[in-house]
Length: 91
Image (tube, rainbow, N blue to C red; front, side, top):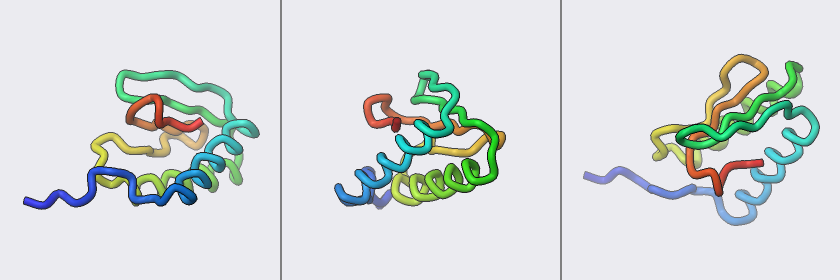
């Protein structure tokens, strides 16, 4: 049974751009970063533009890492849960 790729499908340049987008968003609007049992939880201030960027970032991650059981997902407009190894979590 083929399960598809078990790695991020972004190239190194795309991965770098994604990481930079996460860092920029968190630097400008992040309010909390907490480690969880399976990754990190990031919280952001409530703002329409912040929520739009957050949803776009999450959509990229859910596409490129679709194999991951716990993926990024927006929760209320002010937070995002990211599951996965802490060393790969942005920011």
